[in-house]
Image (cartoon, rainbow, N blue to C red; front, side, top):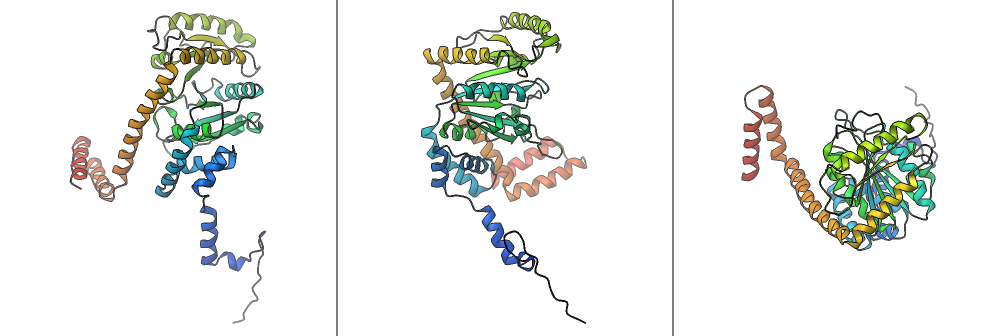
Amino acid sequence: MTNKKKTALKTTDGVSGSEMINPSYISKFKSKRTKTLNTDKLVKGILNQKISELSRAITLIESTNQQHQQQANDILKQCLPHANNSIRIGITGVPGVGKSTFIEAFGEHLTSKGKRVAVLAIDPSSSISKGSILGDKTRMETLVKNNNAYIRPSASGDSLGGVARKTRETIILCEAAGFDIILIETVGVGQSETAVHGMVDFFLLLKLANAGDELQGIKRGIIEMADAIAINKADGDNQKAAKLAKVEFNRALHLYPKKSSGWTPKVSLCSALKNEGIDAIWELVLEYISLTRSSAYFNKKRIEQNKFWLIQTIENRLKSDFFSRTEIKKELENQLTLVEKNKTTPFAAAEFILRLNKSL
């Protein structure tokens, strides 16, 4: 046998191919990649409005790694005193209503007035692959280049209402980073929107004319929660239909109980594509904020939301701890098999697992 001369391939950082396949180098490379900044540096970066540090901190918040979660909690604790100074606006609507186009036009309008805007765009997760496209930055190609705007797409996962599991905490970090307006775009695929309503100051529902739901009062719960309805794409041949839809929605809104805020929801027309009516919607938001702050409802609502998220956080933690236990995982697989073979009922299986958890 003849020994062939090995050729050392060089990478762009000057590392040879033989070195790259060395296990010790791979370990060193992986540790270098996964190394995170310490908490103090991240917090300092966030307070100094550095987007890279803000993004890293949000990634820690979204992580399921226990070590990352602990660091995320420390970051949140230090950022909390610098939060709560923004206006939080939830925006929802069915797919195709033009949420991304509207948010881009709205965001551009706000930044033109000297506001710093953070967009938390929630992408729907596939129930099959569990993946998300996260294409909001692509759809908002103008706003993403704006130095006074920050777009953070997140996967909805299995969260109710199309809201990412850690959206509430992300809001705190964005506020600490000095953003004046937080826009939260929900999935809008028919899930309950209670989650997003429970974390925003103003809830905007985007609608379309001729969608067949003006008189049905579809999604009664969503309309009841809405502080304003904006009929989008009110341009060209759609203008007449949009005006008629506005009349119908105004009539429908008068049938709903009066809001505890004292605010009467309003219907507005807009065309995000042609940048028409956007300023009027912002004026509605300002009018609402002024009214609720003068009546102390604004702060009262924030306090109630914090209480809600306390309970929600406990529920999420209990659920996470329950399913992460080794004994529960093992028995769950066993009970699932028994259910599949029709040897037990789902209810009996659940009761058995709950008893097991209680005895551990």
